[in-house]
Every structure is written in structure tokens, then in C-alpha cells.
Length: 189
Image 1 (tube, one colour):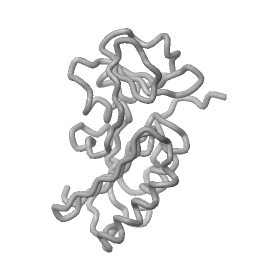
Image 2 (cartoon, one colour):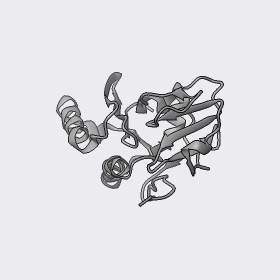
Image 3 (cartoon, helix red, strand yellow):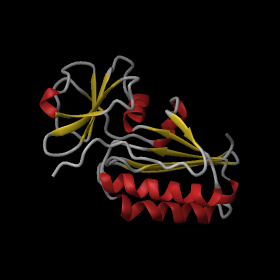
Image 4 (cartoon, helix red, strand yellow):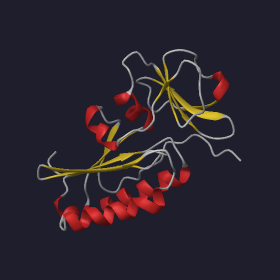
């Protein structure tokens, strides 16, 4: 994998990673869900820095969630469009996998805020077995959380970066003409 472009817009931590001809570019925002306001500005900046960016890519990367619906939509739209036009393979990972690349090795449980007192939860190495549970029902030990109010005993992950996709084994490798589905459990009203 020489030239790689990956995005994560699933949580309040938004990031773009580009590796092209031994040059690396990382753009990230942490702590505010302002993806639409900044994300496409980053893409425009990278295209100005690397005018042949989309022609020279070998592979794409995408975090498929779970996460915030608007954020999921922003990242998936960009990567799906590039895939449709340029037919580049896509490595995907979950938000929880990106968290695990940062978390202590002892962490066995991961949770990301959903809303109305619920969190998207999964156990280590069961990345697609995500479930929506009440925050008070989260495990009390070996837990990492993101975008959640204080959870006693949990390791707080303040932000994740899509560059960490290179540290983990992707859950799938999608090629041309395959639909990318976001990994979210429910929309709570």
C-alpha cells in the first residue's frame, strides 16, 4: 500500500490521513462535531497540495462507525464517491477499533456516546457486535469511553485519529461496486 487516503468523521473526533509518495498529511479536529464545516476544506487543501491526489491513490480507508449520523454521512459520501469514480479498494474499521489502537492493552470494553443516556458498546475483538445500551449498564472495569460524560473507572479516549487504522487489522476490504454500510445500531428519538 503506497498511496493511502483515509477518513474518520464518526465521532466528535474528525480526521483525515493521506500518505502519498512518502509524504504524510494529517488533519484532525477534536471535541466538536463540526465535520461539515471543516472536513471538505481539508480535502480542498490536500488537493491543492497534491493535485493528482485522486488519480495516484492505491487504497482508501474509512471508519464506518458507530457514531453520529451526520458525521457518518460526511465521510461515507466522500469515500463512496472516490470509490465510484476511481475504483479504489477500501479498508474499513469501526470506531471502537480506532479507540483500541489508543487504549491500554488491559481495556476489554469500549463505549461511544449515542444519545439520551445510551452508548454504543462492544467488547474487544467483537467489533461488529455493537449494541446500544444504557450508560449506567456499562461494565465498571476495563472500559474505555469516548464522547461520554464521566464514567467511573473508565479510561477516557479524548480523540481518535484515522491514521491508527494502520495499527489494526481492518474488518473488511471492500472493492468496487460494493455498498458501504454505516455501523450504527439505532436512531433514538
